[in-house]
Image 1 (tube, rainbow, N blue to C red):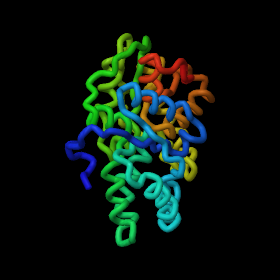
Image 2: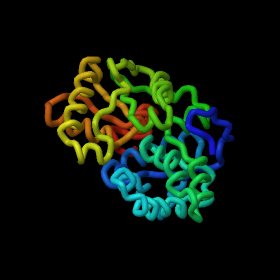
Image 3: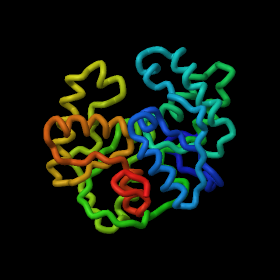
Image 4: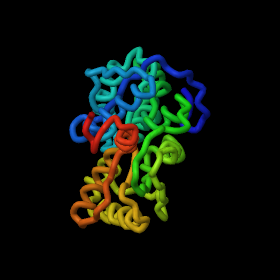
Length: 261
């Protein structure tokens, strides 16, 4: 299996399968819709294996590897034979790519876990590193700042892909926070176990974002965006947290304010 920081040598797949993730499925369906619309608009057919469930990350993070393995096995079954799997989540992609192989090591599914890990990509990574997209043509008049989610940055080593896609959009001004790599405090079960610390981290991130004068705070993980949106609402901060897929789809005229045209 390739490691996250090795150069991609994958040929353009004829079709991809969408790994939608729990938060997108239950709370942010527009992110899944935007991902599909964007990929299809770029000439990539997309299917959706409806047997997929949670990747098992919450159970693993909470110290229950057997339960995590049982849940994760549903993805091995759902994506069996998929040429490539794309997800609008660095966190869930990292779970599959970095944690499935050791989770299933020594089991009957070890080979399947390594195979799925090698075929799974985060959305911006897939667009830039696999499809070779240099510029997503479109227009979006706003000042935007970018949040690097922890799993995407530290486990998948993503930083430039999302910014590269945003930089090509007409009318969009990309401004950097003082510490864009700093965690927002969500961290899945981290925010449940340590809510006061998670809140303080979110507030600090929002202060950084607000200082840029940005209208929109873009990220590649719905967990981070949900956490930041909640705190922004409570603090009266007028900053729109927005998934990269939604912004790109809106910029290309595929969606209007999160609604499919």
